[in-house]
Length: 191
Length: 431
Image (cartoon, rainbow over all chains, first blue to last red):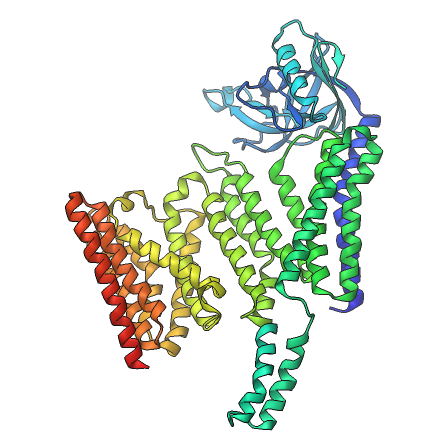
């Protein structure tokens, strides 16, 4: 390998190494700036799932409901498959996942999600209802300063269990990409 | 190599004075080894210090950032997240220009660590969800070119560990049936683990007796053995014995063939690990409780024992030309013996137990005979040790009283010592 080629390749590798974190920043900044704001109501976390270092583990009501899969082409849906969930505003003002697509929808608001579990209906093929898919949302943790995190974890667990609590995550969504902006516990944003 | 070359140069004067070499031959040797004796001037201690220093500085910088993290704006955090990576790249560029081995290893590892730190810190700043397998895969793939650009063995070891980390954290999805992702995990792990192999092959060609090759082989073997235990689906655990048997046989013979005479078994990890593996699997073959747990590979894993089993026979044929057919072909027979015994196990458990003992004792006899033939007490002792282990295992395995077991242990131990003394005398006599 000639020195010139070696330096050229080194330059390309350096660019690629910087491009990965830089592209995360750019995509996120674009979503924060131009994305639509949605509120995702939180749900209690598994009490056996311990606090993990510097972040609070989040769980959402929208991810606990099965979402109908509307594209009929796919017979068997594999776990971890990337899909696209159409977003709609519920009567309570919180975001709902209303339909799931195999391909990116041409219009409307949607979110990139991953398949966790699938329920197939029984009966003849022609009569079958669309499969109901259980998804994982792409935002499931909220990072905090080390000394604040345990307290917020407790507040989050208490507020998520209360039916009346006004507890949600503010998420901006643009072209399927989600940017978690804030966690609001009982009406007060976590700082 | 450098140490050995320096030693040889100091010996040349005495060799000429003693009439072993003439002056012309000594001059040719001096000219040939002079460069190797003085090249680079860095020992492994210096290189390990550079690697450890780079790792500690990298981690220290990250911890200092982390301590004050919440006091900075997102823009400052992004700049600080990318700073270690840029610093590492500058150091890597410097090492690329001066070709210094110490810099290459240190800067390569620092940059590799900084890639992961940058991505993780930015993910934390922007509250990204966690996808650990994808993060480790991205990190490993971005570090990988540094192996070849900087000729950095530390980065090669890092990438192997990255491949193992990826296999460890990749979720196993299918409980009732193997999903496509489950089926792809093993080939993907093998592909990822094979990417630093050309670096290892290059250094084997340059200096197979060097410490660099020995360390690379140790890491590669460790990662391969551990990765094969975690990458396949959980229902494939019973098939792993076939995989390990073929790996052990091929490694033991390949190590003898390509690295013979290299600083004992520690300096020859391929042969050392392979022989240990063959020894352990031969012992397991004599235990009847093992067979119900063993399954013939029926999935993607099936390819490995077939390919490596055939490779072991090919290597044995090469080695047989040099040191006789006995030990190479007994070692290579491990994988087919395993297939045969597993096929017989459901109908003929008694026969399987007997054949398992026959293989273990044949291996022990081949080790003793080859050890005596080549004047290597260690090899002969391995054979005597295997016989003692088979006997002791029977005493543990079978339902015998403590008195009988105690007497059995004493007799076996005494027999082992007696065999050792006999082997020593035979070897002295042969010398």
